[in-house]
Length: 456
Image (cartoon, rainbow, N blue to C red; front, side, top):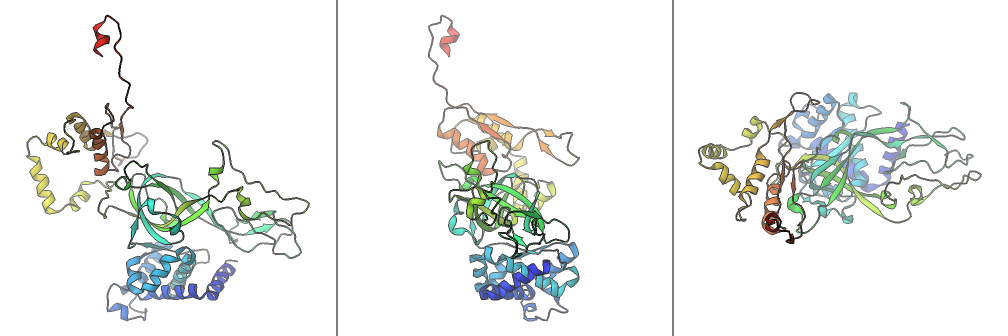
């Protein structure tokens, strides 16, 4: 059955000349690309596999039992601009052909590592253009692109059904593989011509079936603080990761996501708060020949969709200007990331008098006064006591909870003081709150003879 599914996909690619062109040229790219100009002229691939970048990575995949090949998109552009443009414009349509091309390369060079139940994936990174969350609109659906954002929430890793086979409960026939389209999809009709069944199916989950599950995780991404327009609320986008990409992003990370934007039916928006959505199939049991069609299978009555990003790779954004990732704050890593001039400057700061007051004054320097608030913000960024919860293992390092309450009128100077540390170090403030209570009405002096009441 697995061979039938692969043969069907290959036959569809043969009938489509464009998909066949992309598959063949992408396989040539994987076998011929080399960072050394002299090595790219030798395409024998017999004794010089170590000199070709992606053949070497395929060898690592075999040794480490991995299924994801990471491709630098700049290499693909240097190899063929036409191929790179085709992958960008039709990535969601051509993703299956890229996987078939990688499967063919692995079969030719490492046939002992290719198994019938192993599915290979291609992950791109280092795109030429980096978008924002606000740029993710309907004109980007189906294209290969990258965007940056801050991770605010991650879900647990769950199994997702991506391909399924069903058994007819009327005649017992097993259906052809059904690819799931972001929802639970069943066959439209039994393949037995004499069977009228269109609704009674049983999912085949036996090891010998073609049903396949992959790891699935949902990541909530918010646009970076520096990209939010004045007076606007931050936008968020749901990112779905699968396979080897799960557990790559943590809450508070500034990351770059590469993949495709897809549109899925927004079913949850049509229900009232607290209600549970259930798919009700209105099929006559006496005449089961009419199946459920269209969006009725989801209970949708409006053409309302939402955008979801399918990420194939997640990278840290600490190498790009304007981003910060302080997750690895060990002393060795910090010293390696500093230049000699930075080290000399820090050594000179040790002997600077009144360093505490000068560092506090450097926060929101355009705001005059508010020295205590600036010092509180500085201590909240750099200070704190070590806290080791008893339920965590040894090796975790946490700082105690930090909170600053600033009671003020809603004027610009204090707003500037609040936004300054967010721009400086957004990850450190992921669990910190600057609380500003709403302005209180002025107190009316009472006629009480007590002086304390009138002094307020």
